[in-house]
Amino acid sequence: MKIALLGVSGRVGSRLLTELLRRGHQVTGIARDTGKVASQPQLVLKRGDANQPAQLVPLLAGHDAVFSALKFATTDAASLIAAVKQAGVARLLVVGGAATLEVAPGRMLLDTPDFPPAYRPEAEGARRFLDALRGERELDWTFLSPSAEFDPGERTGTFRLGGDQLLTDASGKSWISMEDYAIALVDELETPKHSRRRFTVGY
Image (tube, rainbow, N blue to C red):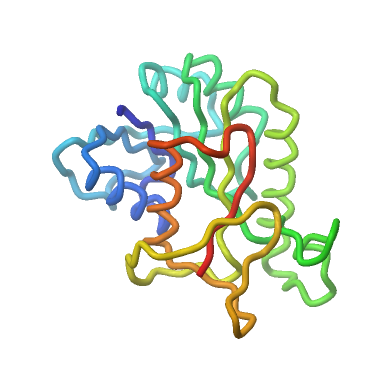
């Protein structure tokens, strides 16, 4: 498939790029600064700002799906969703955050007393983005939340999927590597099982 990847130069975006190319997809990598990304076969790099719809729409047109690995605190959800639709792309797959997952019925991790203040702007942005997607009636979207600990690591291919609840292992730890996260999101691209839904991945 032909994929537009927003945020290709970031930590998660770069791992999604690796996974997409590994599986033979054609990728247009879009970022404000593409200088950090090495040129590779099947990859076209384009400079673009996701908050500038007039600039973004022509970059997205002609793709089978858009992946967004952008920071929520600095991304306008309504603007991005509108750009994807205006470009005529049917699917949007979003790198989500763990803070919007439930740790008890109806209670998000974001709303717990010990949630770190430093992460709040990004977490609140993720909540706004997910709310915007849930109100969307035309676009085929998917929002994949990682586990609480989300760092570079190994590509094991062994993990669990969940819904709206935070996943933890037998010791109570909630974690996933960015490499395995990328597998789960590209799996969803190739074999859709969470259309217009959020899901999560963890060990």
